[in-house]
Structure formats: C-alpha cells, structure tokens
Amino acid sequence: MNRMFNVIVITLALIIAYSVYFFYFGNPNNFEDPATKKKPKKGSVVGAIYTGGPIVGILMSLIIISITFVFERTFSINKAKGRGDISVFVKNVLDKLAKGDFDDALKECDKQRGSLANILRAGIERFVQVENDPNFPVEKKLTEVQRAIDEATNLETPLLEKNLVILSTIASVSVLFGLLGTTIGMIRAFAAFGETGTVDATQLAIGISEALYNTAGGLAAAIISIIFFNYFTTKVDNYLYMIDEAILNVTQIFTLRLKQ
Image (tube, rainbow, N blue to C red; front, side, top):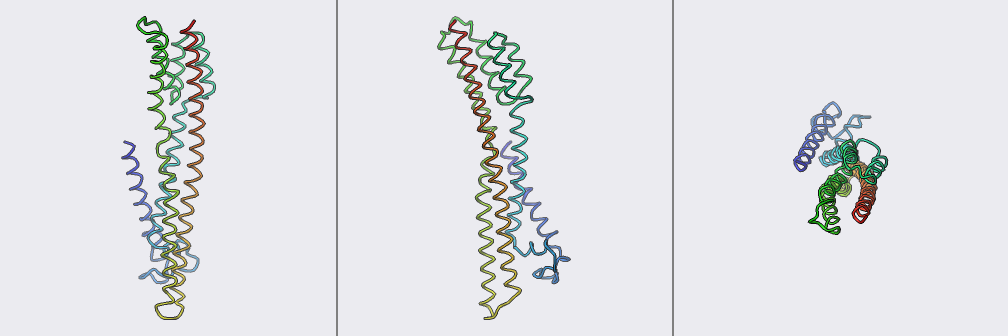
C-alpha cells in the first residue's frame, strides 16, 4: 500500500509538472516567437522559465513530491502521537499501573491511540496474561512482557520513519539535476560562440537562462527537502526517546509488582 502510494505521488507529480511546463510556461502567448518559443516576451517570467529546458519539469516534479511528503509526514507523525498530550497520557498510565488498575490503564491507551499507546497496550495485555500464571517464573514473565513490547515497537517504529528517505533522496538528486541543467545551459551558451565565430546574443541568453533556472529549481527542491527531513528526523527521535522512557518506567513497575 505504501509503495503504491509513492508510485501514485511520483506519477502525478510528473504529470502535473510537465503539464504546467508545456501548457502554461510554454504557452505561445508568452513568447515573441510563438513557433520556436525561444524569445520570451519582456517581463514574462513563466516564458523565461520555459527556456530553462525540459529538466525544469523534473525539478518542478521533485518540488511537488517533496511538498507532498512534507504534508504526509506531518499528518502521519501527528497521528502516531495520538489524540492527547503524550506526557499527560504516560503519567496517567503509570499512575494506574502503580495502583494495579490495568483495565483503566488499557482504557487510557484506547483513548490516546497512536504508536506509544499501542506499544504500552501490548505490554500491559501480556503482563495481565502471565502475571498469575504458575507456569511462568518471574524472569520468564518479564521476558514475555518485553517480547510483546519489542514486537509492538518493531511494528510502530517503521511507520514513524517511512518516507523520510524520499526527502533525503530528493535533497541529493535535485541538486544533481540542477547541476545537470546548469551544465547543459552553459554548454549551449558557449556553443553560441563556436557556431558562427561571433556572439549570438539570443543563443547566449537562452543558455544562461537554462543554467540559472535549473540551478534555482534544484536549490529550491533541495532546501525544502533538507529542512523538513531534519525537522521530521528530530521529531521522530524525540518521540522515540519518549517511547523508550515510557517503556522503561512501565517495565520497572511490572518488575516491582512481580517481586513483591
């Protein structure tokens, strides 16, 4: 499902970017020479961007993909945190566990939802199952609880970190595409000198325009991706730290209860 979503986003981004590139930026009304589309009208920014070449479409699609996954990660991480304040939720669960109110602790988890609530619920439910089982010694009971917590953690953690690799990839790839467009633009600019032996102002302007707009597009996509990759990575790391701390406190309560 996740892979299909990514394919759909990338496909739609390419379609949208190149539709805008060819039909809006490349509208003949934006050029003094509608047939060749090499001379943008004075003051026509979109026409000037069109002269940046087809790589502009790729860079636009990378920007769209990056922005899409920024919204996707924002929604997913907020959903993973649950409905209420995490610190209050953890405190309530720990207080109820310390009193032995396991049902109320599970109700808190159901009310909160999110990754941490799912992990704690798995540990609490397993503890309730093995606490009074005479077939399990104390150490075995703690091991079973830890195993349930680890399994739940292994299921929840990838959901927090997924698609971050896409943002980091775009941050690198967009710069390379921008550099490629810049290189091609400069080749065209210098080729204007070699064809006739004189400076062809039109070809020179087209080449430099292609170089600059591709550079700008590559940097824009990279800046967006890098900023939000670091932002989301920090949020996920902080959340994982809170999960580890909550798990430690819960297991300590279970350990004290079993050894009383």
